[in-house]
Amino acid sequence: MSDRFATRLLKWFDVHGRHDLPWQHPRTPYRVWLSEIMLQQTQVSVVTGYFQRFVDALPDLPALAAAPPDQVLALWSGLGYYARARNLHATAHRCVELHDGDLPRDFDALLALPGIGRSTAGAILAQAWGDRFAILDGNVKRLLARYHGIEGWPGTPTIEKRMWALANSHLPDSRLADFTQAQMDLGATLCTRSNPDCAHCPLHKDCVAYSTNRTASLPTPRPIKAKPEREMHVVWLEDDTGRVLLQRRPPTGVWASLWSLPQFEAIAARDQWLDAQGRIASSSELESIEHVLTHFRLSLHPLHARLAAPKPRLGDNDDHRWVARSELATLGIPAPIRRLLESTS
Image (cartoon, rainbow, N blue to C red; front, side):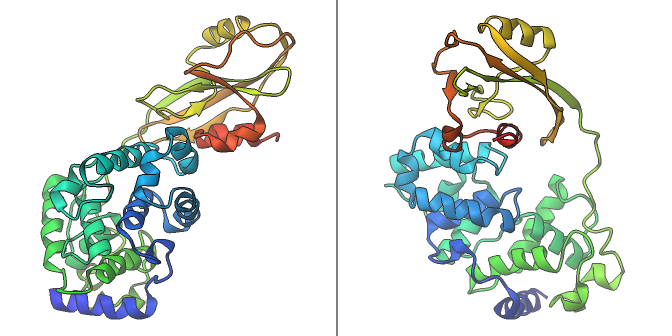
């Protein structure tokens, strides 16, 4: 079965696979690693533009290691899941310190680096060097669950262990980079989460889900838990020259280390802080913003305020910064905050 799986998949890939992705030309360890980190939780169509801008600015691992954190976060801004960018930067520093400025061609050494798990390490080794390692991302989990008729949510340790064994059993002896890409491509284009195109799938003759009419129920979905809701008040404060006050977020938690608007849990705290900044020329409540994060839903309630002369009392420091509109693109800013600031630009 494993021979048929790999052979049919590679034959399909040669004709229908994606061969023009930017990280494939040239296919270097750095570019493969960067693409794999960007593709976590993010679709290819979104990643391609970000990837090209990133490598144009930081073309190799030493350049990434030497870049200031704000530049890395600015290049990442809008992709979300910002821990990925911080881990990327930390890994670059580690590779300069421990691996002569290169990614190591060793599974355990890769696994020890920030932000690189088992599947990502396998993807880097298989695609950058053609080494025989399996991957188990969301596309592959869906593919294996249907092909083998595996019941149970793939996120549980027991099911995941079984899938790793199957993923390894299907590995061909050669063309590991193509095989890795083929699995991801099939999952993204034919074996999709909803309405899979089974008629054109090269594996449907042996697919248990297809033969038993269970493609809609496999893989077993994650148990649904209602996301808690949080509310936050933010102040869009401008000085008399039109500069915006930004505040550096703490190094941990939501939007860690990004520049955002000053935020408060209560209106009273917001108003007390605003009163301390100087004479307010005008202020207005703006429409609330709903933003879904990984673990909760966030309702942002913005207040737009303008300071009158003289200059604001709060100057630039490590935690606060007055920024001209033209400078916003150079900073890592959460996507909903950036959209808010650009809404009247």
